[in-house]
Length: 275
Image 1 (tube, rainbow, N blue to C red):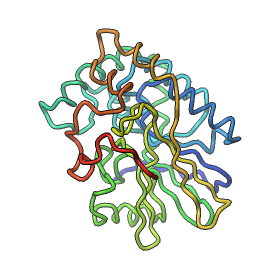
Image 2: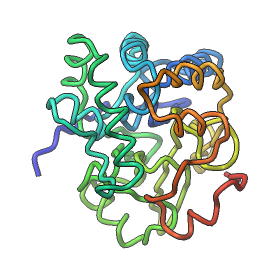
Image 3: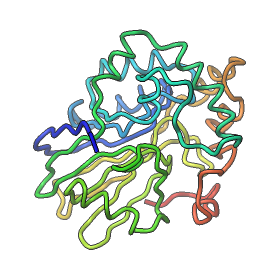
């Protein structure tokens, strides 16, 4: 499997992890403010991909991310945009509501991105690895084997385990599924830090990110909620070109549909996430 894996060496101190910015400029600006207030340098801020997505400001979001100098791997959306593909590559079921909505937001995003932004996508690796404490950490989007694979807390550990083996890692940081969670088995740790571009179907407009802290033993994964100007994000999305249902989710914190979710996660709709 031909992979572009970038090893960024040893990291120490706080590491800010997040995914799915989804063209949500207001959330990204709020997260940058958190990083600055926490004293976390851009090189210790890592995105699991899908900087571009459902919201109204893809170009502004991409340029802000690029100028921040944080790190990111490439998500399925970036791969499709980079390769000038016609769809988002999200692995939605054909004919589903998610598939239909992607036929609105993906062409919109594609039409807004400058050559500078598209060139930046060429620089993003498939995976990032680094050493943190005495553990090796690897960052994937869906999984090592499939950038668009949906992996949730309820996903069987037998599906997760081969990722640790392939990457020879102790900790996997993953995105794509949109829901934050942590699972530990036999000294292996899978962390989805959450996404900042859309709520986590928990009934709150606030979004999720995670800060790793190596000053504690064992290493602490501190899941945090992010408040931002979601009303402005909602307003900008109501432009007649993007799915109104997604604009509504920005405010309500409830997903329009749960097509991608396993039954376990479906039952958590509208419930407070405790992490």
